[in-house]
Length: 116
Image 1 (cartoon, rainbow, N blue to C red):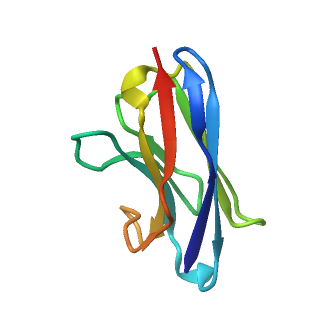
Image 2: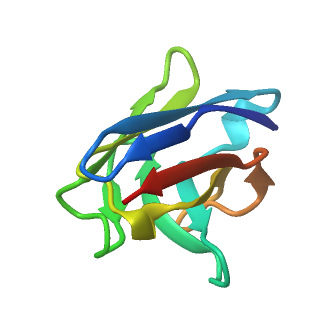
């Protein structure tokens, strides 16, 4: 499985941004997809995940602000981020794999910077 991430960039606090990820290869092996992030000096954390059946989980830190969605026909997963805060600044990684946690396959990171 190959994961190609896109999006990200620089945004002011309170703004919105989205990141997307396209999967290719042995996609039938994927049961769950998600987004992780790793900020400066922080450990990588799972921000949001979505299963093949559409079950979604969010980290408490992003609930109500981030929305994960998936297009199974296009094999893509997206993360819409709103009300962004400086502490959301991180490299965001797309991941996929077997339920319950997506960690077998990884895309390249994409940087999201939120300025205050």
